[in-house]
Length: 270
Ligand SMILES: O=C[C@H](O)[C@@H](O)CC(=O)C(=O)O
Ligand SMILES: [Zn+2]
Image 1 (cartoon, rainbow, N blue to C red):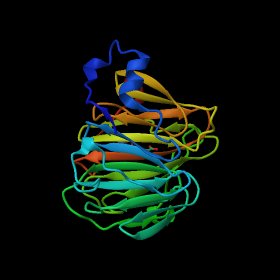
Image 2 (image 1 turned 180 degrees about the vertical axis):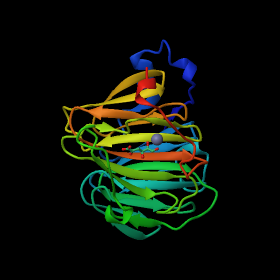
Image 3 (image 1 turned 30 degrees about the vertical axis):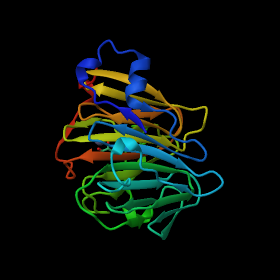
Image 4 (image 1 turned 30 degrees about the horizontal axis):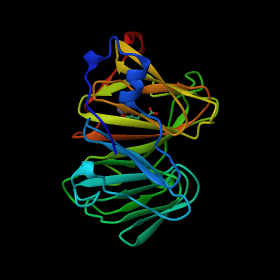
């Protein structure tokens, strides 16, 4: 498991492209036959990729977690970012089609993956909540954006206060309509939550230009398919693609009501 230490906004002026990418971008989460994990000390979010090879793959418990098993004091969100797949939690199989989600609660001892591949997000947990699967339709799709703003998209909220219950995880999938390229504009910060964007369904030769940093000191990361960007509470997170795409957004922190949200007017951005 790779460790990413916490960062502060005063590190951004003067930061090189390479420094920003090492701190905030997870480039290689998907390797056949492996579960790859990245632990950010921002809200202790762990993100990862599980890409089964020939046989099923088991969720490991990396030494760095200092736990008896992965979900001993954590909860987990899984999204199938590929084709058909199965996630088995303590012997119960859950079939997930592309973009479908499974929440596994604290205390589940064995999680195995077949097919997929699967994107993983885990946050610390204090209570054991039921393991639940949801389809895109279960997530009550919300249409946002307009053709004029080049940001028509559908938001599917999976894990949140009125959806699948969790201790702190909030997670969903946003699908851009062909012809649209922008997500999350006007952008925002949320002081009580760290968020990770995982971009997928992007052709291999296309990129998303992801904007991060304080609203008045932004930087960009050029992101390829199946890469994730860690957004600390002080950072904006938004982007535009050279092609339409989808992304999983997931948050950890103490706020699930979204009332820590600070909207940024487009004209305030620098
Ligand atoms: O805090 C909320 C998150 O940044 C996302 O839900 C935003 C998003 O999916 C979008 O506007 O497309
Ligand atoms: Zn956000």
